[in-house]
Image 1 (cartoon, rainbow, N blue to C red):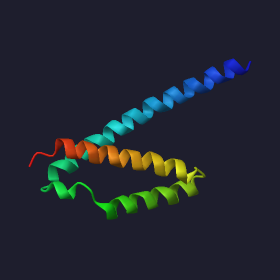
Image 2: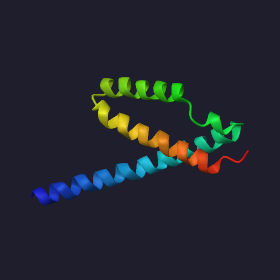
Image 3: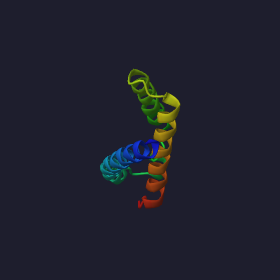
Image 4: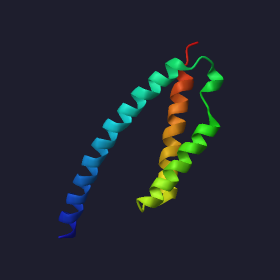
Length: 92
């Protein structure tokens, strides 16, 4: 009985993962556009913007009753993955 419930929940998680991949792709398309607008490599890391984003995510997480430690880690990793991508692909 539990195994069946577990499989159902895992299928739901798989479905959400696919939706997340679609959103991540859209986000990275925007990151590529942003990168094209940056003239200097030093513009890649904007600590003030990172701080603003993480604070917004914290507030939204609390409002939606999501553990803010989890969302902070997810967004921090995503931000730094984008920064890494931008550094590898900066061509000016």
